[in-house]
Image (cartoon, rainbow, N blue to C red; front, side, top):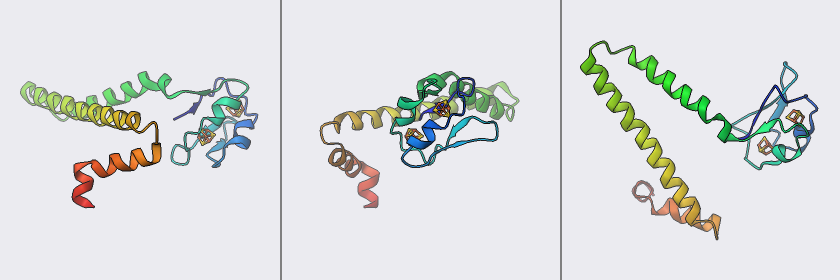
Length: 135
Ligand code: SF4
Ligand code: SF4
C-alpha cells in the first residue's frame, strides 16, 4: 500500500482532495498520512503528489524485514536452552515459509485472473479446498 514520506510531504492536501475514499488526512504533525484499512490501492495519491512524497510499498521491505526480525528476537527471549532456541527457530522458518507460500499462490491466482479479474478471482476462491468445505 502507498505511504507518505514525511520528509518530502509539504502538507499541501492535494492527495486528500483526490483520494476517492477519504483515506488520507493531515496529522497534527502537518503531514499527510494514509489509513491502511480505508485505502483501496487506486494509486491516485501517488500520481498527483507534486513532491513525490507518496511512495511505493517496495521501499518498506527493509523495515518490514526488520519488524519481523524484532518479533523473532522478542519471542526468542522466552527460550533459554540452545535446543529450545533451535526448535523455535525451526518453527519461525516454517511460519515464514508458510507466509511465502500463501503470497506465491495468491500472486499465481491474480496472474491467472488477469484477463477477466472478477470472474477469475471468484473462480480461484471457489476452487480452494477450504472454500469448498465451508461453502
Ligand atoms: S500531495 Fe504530497 S505533498 Fe501534498 S499533502 Fe499529499 S503527500 Fe503531502
Ligand atoms: S491509493 Fe487511492 S485510496 Fe489509497 S490513499 Fe491513495 S488515493 Fe486514497
